[in-house]
Length: 67
Image (cartoon, rainbow, N blue to C red; front, side, top):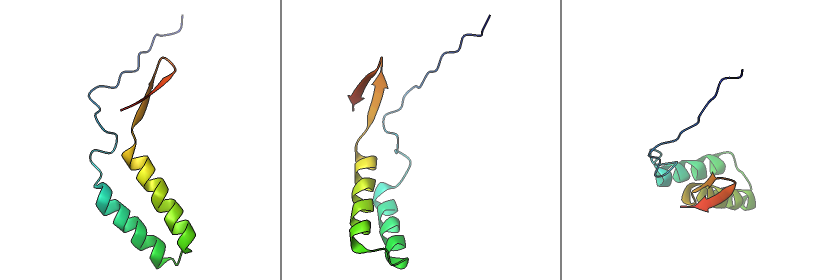
């Protein structure tokens, strides 16, 4: 008989709560400029960073739920 496992996640209010989001974005911008990344790529990566760190979703019973 296979063992039964239960996955639980408790008290998560924000996935990135311990990451200084504004400071990390500034570091990302500095790194992209230092490596002379083209401006369009810099803009796209910064926009993706903003989307990833500002929108929180989770799934439950195959439903995607924004928080």
